[in-house]
Amino acid sequence: MIPILPVPKRYAWGSLDRLQTMFGDGDTSVTQGSGPLAEMWFSAHEQLPGGTPMASDALIREESCGQGEEKSRSAEGDRNIGVRRVALPDLLKQNPEGLLGRVASRQWGPMLPYLLKVIAVREPLSLQVHPLDFEARRGFHREEDAGVPLQAPDRSFRDTRGKHEMVVALEPFAASVGFAPIARQIRALRSVTHPLPQRMADILESGEPSTPRIDAMMPESARVWSQTARRVFRAFALAASYGGDIGTVGLLDAAAGCVEGNAERLMLSNAMRAAQSFPADASALCLLMMNPVRLRKGESISIAPGTPHVYLHGLAAEIMTNSDNVLRAGLTVKYRDLPNLLRSLNAMPTPPAAPYVVGDRAFGIAGRLGGDRVVGGLLGGGRVVGGGYADEGVERAGMALYHPCVDEFSLIYGHVDGGRVAEWPLPMLAQDRPRIVVCVKGAVQCRTERPGGITDAVLTCGKAMFVPASDGLLRVVGYEKTGGDILLASTGI
Image 1 (tube, rainbow, N blue to C red):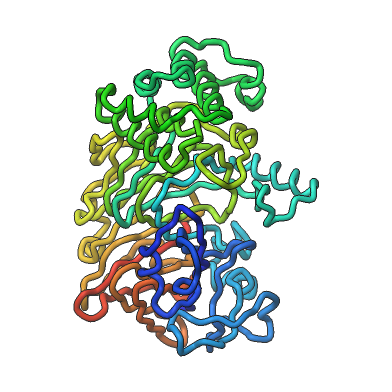
Image 2: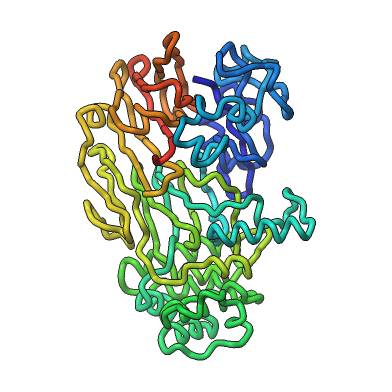
């Protein structure tokens, strides 16, 4: 096992204390930084790599550290200040098969295929879409040819990969994800007495001809779209491209008593929350077209490339394809790239998708759409298994395994009681896979067995380890009396 150091990301929508408390023990990059703390990246992304301190591990050779070394600290805290650090991507290149495993290294090369984050959302963040694979490749090379620097604020594509992501709530989490049924969109928009939302509803209801400006934004694939998708696209693009201030907060406040139905009320509530943070941005009306999602601790949602989404409030783990590509349409002070967003947009009304979950009755794993609880059923293609244990070890450990049916990643989240062992004969823990384990509450002891010895490490809250594929079976024990909560990321195959 190798300590891994997260990359802190500070954005205006982040927490003032939540991540600081979780990750601040002995880490000056967290405690001494200025501004809200939004994300902690456990990353091997080439542009924003996490690091690992040099250690007496047979997998690491100091003479081949490469570039990018700096003074840092390990997961053990202040006592290791000054230890040489190597970026995780450089480490993986030294021994791809040993660190990543045979399957992962052959499929993705010397690259960790996933990126794990812990995010704290205090204020709504952008209305966004992640690009499709081919759009990411095309956009990246187009910006490279144009000479746009990788870190330029107006750069949209920082790598060539599309992005699929999954969110698992660590505390209650609110979002808007994907397009709601047409009838629900129309009811929500009709409640707002202004020409813009009324025209959006007209487009959805009767297919009112759009302007050439809006139709010119449609991708080539729109030639084979259904009329429903074309109408949704036109209504969404109309609001997202609207340049004026229509007094959205006052309009939504006046509409609050005019809507019926729990889902519509949640749609209005989400739009109001976004509008209060960005009162001059009419794209908040787009949330009246989107599915409102409320997740409780342990509940999850899977977001495919092309799915519009807005995170509104809460604490969550976020795991995704190893990509930093985000296309924004509104509700942000960052660069907006509506044309590229619309080229990847999935305009079909679709219920939010939940990943396949091997459940834990402590969480009551399931998803909720519009406040209606869905248990042991389908949410837009993702199977949810409530209380379906893979084996006694999962039940005893209070764990849930989340798998969104993509090859790049899967995630385990749950609690290990003090003194109890969590040892699972599950593929992501027992086989040839690269793993990252993060303690998010309390403390746990991790143990791996590998040829030549046994490695032990105690992780307190906010500390993390990279567990190489060659380390084999991972055992996690709840430390002292209280035990701890962990996230354990791995590949999906």
